[in-house]
Amino acid sequence: MDVELTPMPLVLMYHSVQPYEADPYHVIVSPSRFARQMRWLRRRGMRGVSMRELLQARRAGSGAGLVGLTFDDGYANFITEVMPVLDNYGFTATVYVVAGALGGHNAWDEPGPRMELMTRGGVKHAAACGMEIGSHSLAHVRLPEVPADDLAEQVGLSRDILADLSGQDVTGFCYPYGAAGAREAEVVEAAGYDYAVATKPIAVTGRYAIPRTFVGDRDAAARLFAKVARHRLTAGRAA
Image (cartoon, helix red, strand yellow):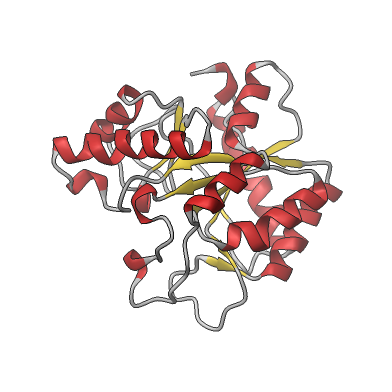
């Protein structure tokens, strides 16, 4: 296994941060809860960073205390609710953007709450502020159900669009719905990505299926402590 993945790093998975009344898919964290979660990390000597920074630091042997912060779907509230809190603590993060839905909304979650997605300007702003821009495909589809030609476009064209827009070398991919197998991982690698993250255990392992720990609105201090402890136990066994 790659040295930066031994043991497997702790990577937290978020989606949307905003006030809410209903959340049937459990993808929303309230702003106040999110702020307390970031404060909890800081008080325990941990620093939230983008996946790019996390992997670079671990490659250099300096990853102690770093925690990956990731945000799926590229919601507009990443700019308004997430980035100010990250800036307050000197944290960074990776936001995985659906390249073909910029300025739209989360149509894939209907009939769940409608949430606005980042615009082209939002992506540029996040990148300029030091956030990593990653790809979440072109259209947020289940990649194992996509024909080979369409799969290459979902993975490769989305990378090109986001690289042109952000000015970054887009090296990270996030599988929509966490759905992936060997075929999808091979296409992601062939498209030039350095790594990919999963949302749940899949058949593939390694740098193109880095596991993450879900964080929700119910995760106060005790639950965060338990999740971090469980990760350390699991990662230690796998090392």
